[in-house]
Length: 283
Picture 1 (tube, rainbow, N blue to C red):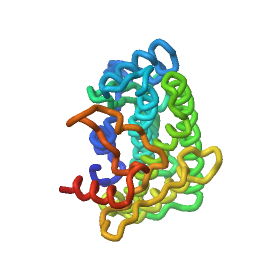
Picture 2 (tube, one colour):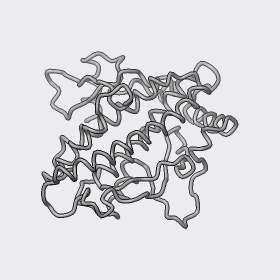
Picture 3 (cartoon, rainbow, N blue to C red):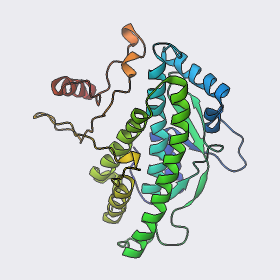
Picture 4 (cartoon, rainbow, N blue to C red):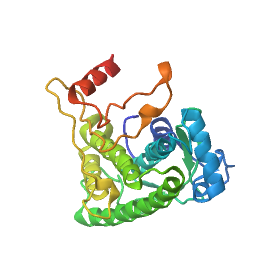
């Protein structure tokens, strides 16, 4: 991730593109990507999208690989969710999350790229954003909490509609789909809190911690608040690593030399296997 250096629009656009494959479309710009999120809510268009994803991943949509198509869709879509959260928490900016505005395309391997428009600044003249390098007041934090709670709830409704539709087509479990998103969201927030090079100033760290509490507030209605375990190993000295509650089924993708295998956060791995995998990935 590109390091944070303030409420800079150009930097935000670059970070969203490089870290979350999400581009910002101008109001008058032509649509760049083939599919709209709203297409996932229509049976025929949804089938075309999921079939293309399955083909790119070497899975059998409608057959034995159908559930994996659904779970991997949720895991891939979590990248877009992380873009929404990063824009809000690091750059005090709300992205447009409406079904008819957000668009995406497949990249050839079953992963996706996204585009949307900016909605507005979280600050909006209220002092909720970076502003002067001073600690935010309790009033500012209270208003920021309200704004982020509203965004969180809107985003959950957005995900709920899409995942119900994809689950109906693939047989994937929506609880698993939401848990896969929650894992990546929590891993993102853990990373930005732990990495001083990202937050840079004490004020930004305070805002990040404040926002993380809102995003992960424990509630039966908050799908992001799933409790996750941290990886522990006596010889692991790397950054905090959260473990998924459910396997995303990525190991079903490909075969032979192109086989995916288990992810390093997969619950199917034991501690030693995970540690060896992490060491190998650092080579």
